[in-house]
Amino acid sequence: MHFEVLSTDIISRARRGRLTTAHGVIETPVFMPVGTQGTVKATTPSELLEVGAQVILGNTYHLFLRPGLEVIQHCGGLHKFMGWDRPILTDSGGFQVFSLSKLRRITEEGVHFNSHIDGAPCFLSPELSMQVQQTLGSDIVMAFDECPPYPSEYEYTATSLERTLRWAYRCRAWGEKRRNGTHPLLFAIVQGGIYHDLREKSARELVSLDFDGYAVGGVSVGEPEPEMMRAIDNSEPFLPQDKPRYAMGLGTPPQLVEMVARGIDMFDCVLPTRLARNGTAFTATGTMNLKNATYRTDLRPIEEGCSCSTCRSFARAYIRHLVKAEEILGLRLITIHNLHFYLNLTKQIRAALEAGTFARFREHFVANYVRYEPQVSERESEVEP
Image (cartoon, rainbow, N blue to C red):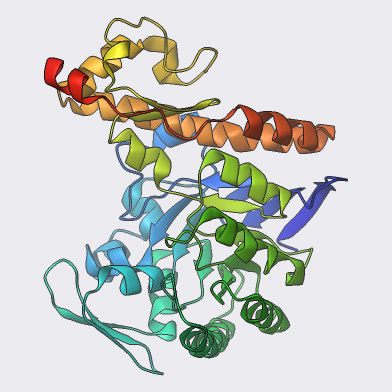
C-alpha cells in the first residue's frame, strides 16, 4: 500500500494521509513547489528543506528539450543532477505541449510540435513521456494527456477525452511491462473540461485501470473560480478513497483550503515563486506588494510571527529597497517567504485535521484572507521610479 488515510474530517471531505515513495514519505495534504526545469526558481535544495518542502515537481517537456535526457542520464538522474534527495513528481509534458507550442499536430500516436526554444520539430507520445520520466528517475509520474483550453465546446472536449483515455491505457501498459521493485507511482489525469458527464466518465474509466493515484487536470486554465471548483466537485466523488488525489496547477491559498475540504491531497502552483519575482509576498490576510511606497521605512518583517529565515532577519523596508533596486536578493528573500507560507499552510491544515478542528480553521482562514493588495499608484510611480 502506497497511500493510507490517517484521519478524516467529519464535516467536509478533507482527509489527512501519508504517501510512500522510493525517495521518502510524503505527509498529506501537501503543497509541492514547482521546479519545472530542474530548479525551484531562486532557491537551493537546502533552502527548500528549510522551508519544509517534502516533494518538488519537474517537467518532462522542458527537461526533454533542455538539457536533454543524455545529460541528465549521464549525471545519474534528476535527483543527483539537481542535488535533491527527496521525492520528485514529474508532469507528463502534455500541458506544456498544448500551451507553449504554437505549431502542433495531434495524432492518435502522439503530438508533433515545434520546440518553443528554437523551433526544432519534436514528438511526444504516451510511451515516450513514460520513458522520459523513467529516465529522469521520478518517484511519481503522470500519464500523458491532452489539456483542452477554456472555453472548449462539448464535442471537442469529448473527442479530446476519448483520446486521453486511450493514451492512459497506453501509459499503463508501458508501465506494466517495465514494472520492478523500484518502479515509480503512476498517476492518471481526469479531464472533461466543465462538463459533469465527461468528468464522471473520465474518472470512472481511469479508476477501472487501477492507477496509483489520480489527478484532476484541465483546471486553472482561464476558467472562473466557480467553474474550477465544479471541476473538482464533478471529479472527486468518483475517485477511490484509498488513492491520493492531486489538483494540478492550483492555486491561491484560499483555493488550497477549499480543495482540501473537497477531498484533494496534493497541490502544486507557480504563484509563490512567480509573484515573488514581481515583488509580491503572501500573508495570512492576503498578498502584499512590497514595491508600494508605504513600506519604504517599514521595519516590520513581511509577516509578524512568521518563522522563515527572511522574516527572522530582514525588514520590509530593506526588501522593498532590494526590489526597487532590482537586486536579485530581494526576489530570493520573498521567494523563500512565499514558499514557507504555502508549506506552512498545508502543515497547519494537517495539524487541524489531526486535532479535529479543520472546519474552524477553514472558516477563519478563508474569512480573513483578502485577494490582492492594490499595486503602486500612478502618483507613487512618479515619485518613486
